[in-house]
Image (cartoon, rainbow, N blue to C red; front, side, top):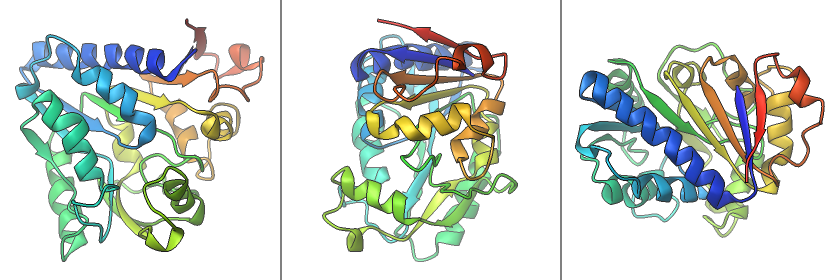
Length: 261
């Protein structure tokens, strides 16, 4: 895993967007089509804004999936990931081929099967990910399921995950946060050819440390990203604050830290 550290969320987002745009362009050049997975949340806003402002991407040739969605939350709710992605990515970029997870559907199992079948039908060129305060990737809270091959799964959200949503201002109190969600599975995320992982802010520092310096374990779900052959983790100075100096020499003997301005 390549780890890149930037001074600000904005410079981090711009650099991540440049890598993401290059991956999309390469896929379109090679196959006339690009398949992407997009994350949501406050940590992704600067990145998505920079990406949608990037020139020379044939967005009409992009097929998009998203990572997760609350069960029982209407698309009109400000915290709906469908709403956020439509506003921050699909509409701004002009993506017309996308697959939304309808968490408000009467039968979430049917949504899991239908969208999962579409996702698994062909390789994903690049996935945009984040890491939660509790180390989750998508809504795979600890202890995460590292074994299932199902593209999407139904999950129970833990208290730390739900409290993060309140802390970020999406909900006024814990009682409003859904307790269940549809989430892309860990193994499905790892099948993407390239991972662009965007993780700014001090509140993510402990999760970043566990991701990079602890054991690869379901108790630190994001640690599994170290097993991917083409993953780049974008940090700012705040989210990288707890990393040890020894990281530069010991991280899997394959990773490197590049400090950028």
